[in-house]
Length: 164
Image (tube, rainbow, N blue to C red; front, side, top):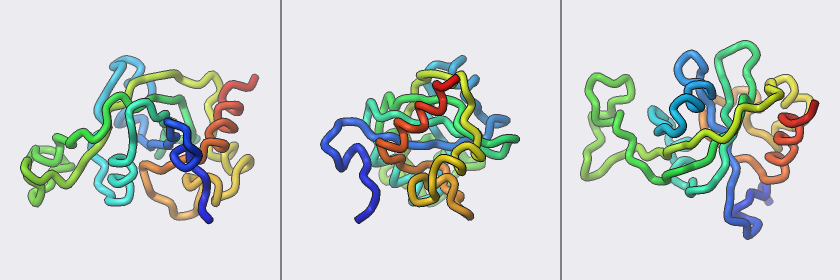
């Protein structure tokens, strides 16, 4: 039997971890913008996770490709099943010539800023606190940019982020 996510436990909300390189788009950018589309995901498994998100779900904003990588804050899903517009833009690095407006291949979500954590939760802290089975982001070789988080793990991450 696999991990228990909020969707499996009868609650209305799921938790997610979504990665972005802070040089491209950071938690500070989202705080400034308030709400933004999470575009450019081009992995089918990550896309399927995006398609299964619902309005009100909570996502941890993970800064990747930085020192140290880690969870910087949280956001909520404000709009679900959004067609990613970058797939239709020939000048975008995320352009997909096989995708059409009648049959788009890439869907995403809109996210709204919730908070920047007082305590940045680094990857090394996550590795000390969780096993790879509990938290996919610490699995060796994991490159997914979007992944589900078990509800109990999410609560433990929040404790780390709010402890002083």
